[in-house]
Image (cartoon, rainbow over all chains, first blue to last red; front, side):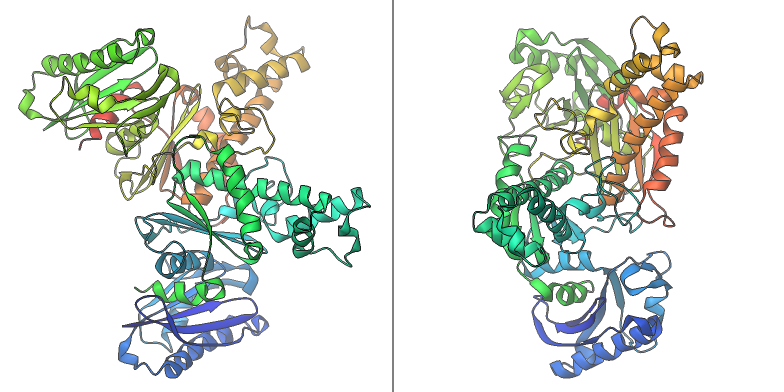
Length: 309
Length: 309
């Protein structure tokens, strides 16, 4: 059997046909054009799914289900999407609308949860009984696998790992709370700290950049710039603190790191691992491996598809 | 069938015989006398288990297993207890030593995990598919139930909820890290904040106490003392922050609060609930109920017994 996955982003919609092993056999995409309102976007999602099936050469009978990853949550009691901030959606009856065009079982879950499932089926956490997936980008998303299955919690409101408070009374977060991990662990945190460091250290190469991006800071740290190295050291400490909180809580087999910031690769992961070794509660016991995610942008399609497996 | 539970504390050892429903039908205890070393203590644990069985009138054939709750962890790979700080134990082959005297399956788990299991079988979380138990005492212990079973993690190092970092660079913790939730959520935190408040507010009734205990602060806050009320408000905020981190992570059905501090009852739980309503990420979605644990000191015996069920 085959599974269709739809990855709903603020900029693009992507759909793909995926086999039992989580391999994409065909994919298509189109712009989301959020401003048209949810009905037009959902209609395009259905069309995109049908186009992906056509492109794959798979017959409709061989398609078991359609899965959708959204940058929000589904209320499992009603099948309605209460919020999708990036899409401007509010109380959208997503499953009902999709059923107008698609006569297959339809599954919906959060995009980070879906990426977690993808890594657990076909990526770095494949085969792990328990894992946590973190995506470090414009926000910190996350997903939790327990007993080999994505764990969605009792009310569908969990896995908001970016909103774990790590600095009581700390930086203001978009969610209305203060000191959320996200404020310290996303690309913007590197930019904020890099900009402050540039001002404080006129000799730093950070001052040579037109505008400071996360990559500016990472590159300057790699090149041995002292101010940038200090920023990066602090940033990896923030990352390690959130990760040790995860370990101290549910002690997964593996923690996979994806998202834009993870492009820094071993330069990012290695210092996080070193800091973790000092932060874990039981210093001589084994604990979760921390690894880079491997599926990149395809995780959205693969994971959405695998919701129906 | 019946199940023996042994609750190993720094001051007392307790053992009981428990039925299928988690009800204690006989219990006995004796002083731990830690200073004698682990061999004498473990020998007493075995004797105490046999005395409990004798007292219960249950025949040895009707006893299915012996479970032990320890203030530490068991390495599931080796059956050895690597650390038990309160007992001064280091690399104690607990299961092997118990087997010398007891010819039954023996199970060992952390005392907070065991209390979690007890509440989930016979206490406030009975029947919940997912729950978290928090014990607020001299430390913050915790346990996690997922899919109706106590979740021990991949390496046995999880459920250390008290050591979730909530204030990066905050108060020094006994574990070597800074800003652990425990530092802000235990009885000692109330004493620390109460003592500071007494100094800052000479008019406060807190200054009338010979020495300030957690109860002094709670009683003064109940009586309407402004300084004590501020301390208690801050304390319940710290509690709510840790609890919202739990909700944002694994979204359990119920969070049960036990331990010494929970004796403050509704006066404690009510403000925590009010603060949670403001802290949760999805303001209009349902989330975990926060309730007082109901089994008190018996949770240790009941939960240890239920390890074998």
